[in-house]
Image 1 (cartoon, rainbow, N blue to C red):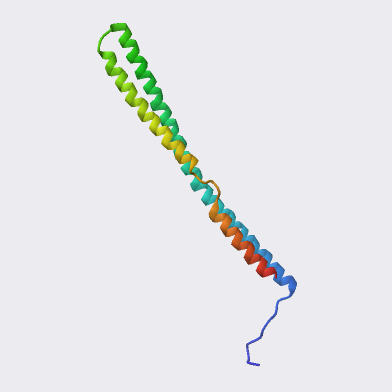
Image 2: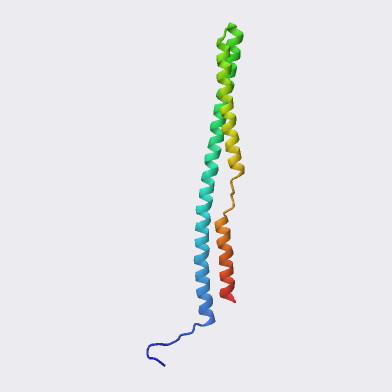
Length: 132
């Protein structure tokens, strides 16, 4: 046997202790990955919710402009009401498209942390191989 080359076998207890330590590290890493992934998705949802709120505010402005047009039309019987109705209709169309686009983006947002799920599946396979 060569000098300095000593094969040291670990006991079953040492192996399980090492496995427990590695498993703990792995779980912490998976939790960190899930936090990053969920934070990113929550940020996307937050931006779309803000878009919906902004679209709602623009829609409110549209209602005010339409009402101003009706009031001006009835009060004065002048062509100024036509301008107010046109502006109100344009603002209403913009609000509709903003809200619709944001709602569609929210419907298509996948909230499941897929990277984390895939990684946990791989970890489970690794852990099963280590125990076998």
